[in-house]
Length: 528
Image (cartoon, rainbow, N blue to C red; front, side, top):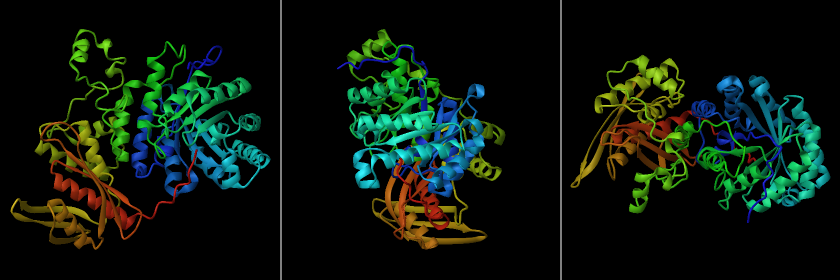
């Protein structure tokens, strides 16, 4: 059934609000360190998103620091210096609002506080034990308090898709009166259906007019996040909240690349509506987020999956050869597919390496550059060309090491069909050199057990992933693993090398060092 569109006489700009670093990171296993968040934020600025929700400042020192650093470095770095705006999430609680205000303060006029409060009857009854009047007062008080710290205020009535429409309208108008400049309508549990959700957005945009921007934030529990977001745009929403690769709580959020390309590709339907996203940066951004979260993009994922522009059926191939538009509705090059940089070689110097890393969004200290340069030369000796994907894997392996207790000096192993796998591992701890050997079910298992014997930190391997960063027999192998140590919260480790066993050892040692030095991350409070 066709959704009636409400586009006439409205702004033609759809603001793209990226919440990869907040809602995306809340996805179990997607936790990132500050360096990784900064790299993604820089790339999001290149992608030209309008708003970056950088985190939830009150939940941990790490989240506060990342929002503050992103506010200081990234705000206003998009072309023209108009964005991105940097946003911090907050509950309608004074300490949350104050933390968010302090965190986004370095962004100046490009800072935003995003306040949320549940409004659905099921949340009021079972989560808050409050009535609608109490919730309305809390929402207004929260927005007013935030307005004292920042002029750009967004409010989200959590679980809006299941909120009674009259009350949702009342809350929306009240928070706008209190100072909210954007009201976001979240489908928090992915319950909405496009036609129904579009009707809600149409009702609200008609009541609100030009007093505030109506936004949509849709989850993908029924696989309808992008469809619901687009229904919102067709009915007057002018901000879409989304994540790269659609990562997020449970089944994820609306996928940024899908929403943006749908608006661009179907301009015949979304007449005069456009985003400012630089679509040529989409694939690059997708790959970066995939690496830093260790979430592999499925091959048949729309827009950014490896098969998105692959054609195997004979009739399709014939049509493509005659005219690409027969089976391709988008130009893959305009999304970033097929764009490559000239690779470096072992003869490339430190300056060339540093410049390429800066181009890739990697801002490293001199000490980190030194470690990466050593690894770069080692890879250069093992293969003819060192590609950008190899470099990013190397940075994740070498520069992401915490203030390491142990560093890998040397490994050796023997094994075979009729031999017991054995490994010897040499680690350094300061000036001390430690050597142990072990047997195992295979060379990787033997190496990991030897590391356990040296460090005294016995880990239980929960997940192990190996991927080639580029094609070819000489590709760098990147290992991402998840391990628990003595019942602690699982820790992710990463390592890269042209030798798979060495990459595994680096990844496991990375996790061991994190377990030894990192405190437990504060438990994330669920958001919209």
